[in-house]
Length: 602
Image (cartoon, rainbow, N blue to C red; front, side, top):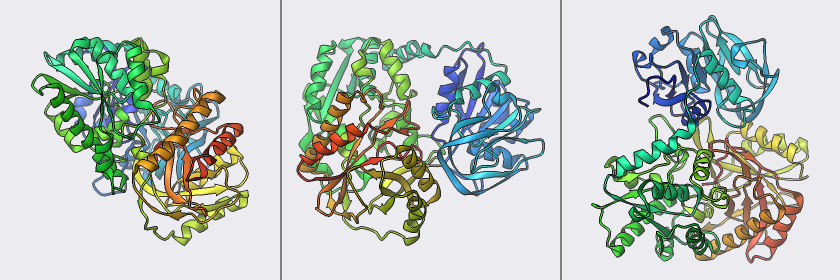
């Protein structure tokens, strides 16, 4: 950012999943904010009106954990530490951090103590969003406790005189109800003027595209999802349709009839510069016999590049005249360990090694790479795209490839203490439980987990189930996800089978996914739910039928998500439709928030 007249906030990046989201939220409040390395020398930070220390996947108790230049604390600039940043402030300034007796992931209630400028205008009790294992146990000299939760005595602290504050929770995520108010108060503490216009990025990105591309034309892979569609429209606006070519690759991992529908609605809305390449046979052959989710993602990413090269050769396009574009958004980068201290949650198909090499050579342009899903949708509307395109449910780049879970069929023995601890929580509430013999990806404390899901059966009481889900994932190591059996009367022992990606399994998933989408539209719930992955498990019931998980969530930017209950009538109809699909068995619904469970299972 070159405009020295604007007040600026620096976000020191310790690798937290939400680091960039903090900067996004500050910009939305009218103040320019940018990410800087956590080890930036203190004198270079003197240009900022305030400093925010991000969260991170590490522990301040670990040797060699990242720190900031301690000279920062002598500069009289307001500082706000979040999660890891809160703990780091406490330890560096003479306090104490310990391993928490109880982990906290997801919603919690904060009880505010006394008054402080940071919590101006808030109520005594506030809903917040936690994601931590360690906790501050003793405060540095000059600090006071500003808020607590049931499981965290020091949920917020501050040295009000020195304008240094620490929050164990995440005000930047939407599930902290008044998080934006807290950030607004911090900007007031920093005496920031609100002159930044967050909508200005359209003009900035357009100019950047023209400067980066120069005289070259642009070739974009268009999945048909929100991100690639907006990127396609943006490139057309910036360069003109004669300099842009879109290619949709049918990888055999699309939803029912989707590739044909993409071509129809793109042409309907004026995008005549889009071609379709059928590479489904090549993708399925490459994936055959692959079980590991990370390997699947990398194979899919490499296959997209190979299909792109074949299409370029077929069309007679040369790399000297054309540059590759992608609809990458920021969550793809951070979850793929795209910043220095970030943990790899999962490798997105647009962040495989070969793509990173092309990026380093300047051969790829990603006009949306700094944006989140909610910002992409705002941009799409500003570009004049119809709501039916902009507000489609997100669909992962690897498609159903990450929703058909695979297994070599070797079920590991579930540890008895994990099962016992789960039953001690679920049993008194009237629910049976069983730990499923497979693992899924999660994110806890900004780090990747690969742990077991717990299945609960019993009364369909969403409030009780949500509470149990939080208690189980917070209190039981080795579990990162809780699901509920919709058509299951009691918990049975499910069997893990050997299964990889096959045409028949994909067709099975396509049918139930289509039935679920149709029912959501019919019931009016499609527009109230942000995303609804349907996942096929390599797990069978007593009738040797494969089981399916529904994953309805509410989110804005995909960095956090809240489980969204469906209507009972909707679930009953989905179960009825599932029974008509050969080979489908029990239907589960994922009742886990993010964190600790990622939106997708892989």
